[in-house]
Amino acid sequence: MNGDLKQLQQKLGLSFQNRQLLKQAFTHASYVNEHRFSQYEDNERLEFLGDAVLELTVSEHLYRLFPDRPEGELTKLRAAIVCEPSLVRFAESLEFGHYVLLGKGEELTGGRTRPALLADVFESFIGALYLDQGLEAVTAFLHRHVFSQLTFDGKLQTSDYKTELQELTQHHNMGTLEYRIIEERGPAHEREFVSEVWMEGRALGRGTGRSKKEAEQQAAAVALNVLKASDSRD
Image 1 (cartoon, rainbow, N blue to C red):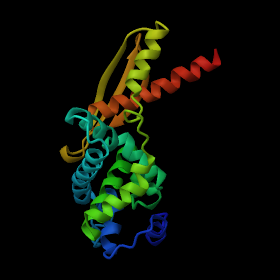
Image 2 (image 1 turned 30 degrees about the vertical axis):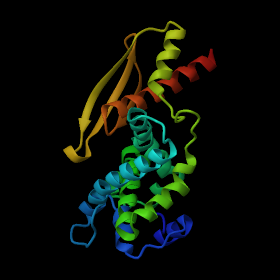
Image 3 (image 1 turned 135 degrees about the vertical axis):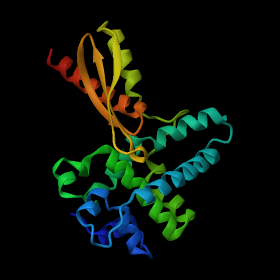
Image 4 (image 1 turned 90 degrees about the vertical axis):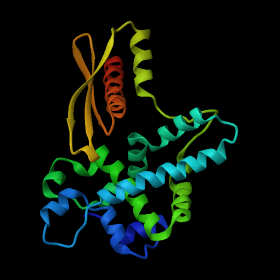
């Protein structure tokens, strides 16, 4: 682990009563597998809990923030906040990847910056904070470090890369887009999908996500960068 969890607590303005919970939140399964005779526990159970706590706290925030919005709109707003790309962005802004305990193999293959891993760590941290200090502490943390990053202007300003890519290719008559799920990996509770977006017989981008939609969004984001870079060179 590159970072000191005491330093992280100071940066976040928190003090965990149960430091072991915090340590568990940043312990990846690959690290536990390489230290089988130690007392380490991985963060998968905390991730499960954190996911549910996030759903609740974000739902309450939106319910109070938009008293006149119908259920369907609130559901879309919540999905935009708790989707993998958003959770990755929150984790990166807090430099959570710096503090994760990883196995050597995961470290060597860039696990510290892998989107699915960062999203999981963010959820695990939320689960740990909930167990240690309760729902009010989680809500306060989210207001300081998550809700403050969101910009609402009639609707949540989030990137829909698939729509942006579709509009770009249609505007320039480039061809028809096709999304393909080329791989599904990991256990059922930690499924990861790999998607590619194709146009006119060539792959433009590849992305990963915990759902097919998230993987397609990541692939579209890569394709947009490729096309914009190509356009700038012409």
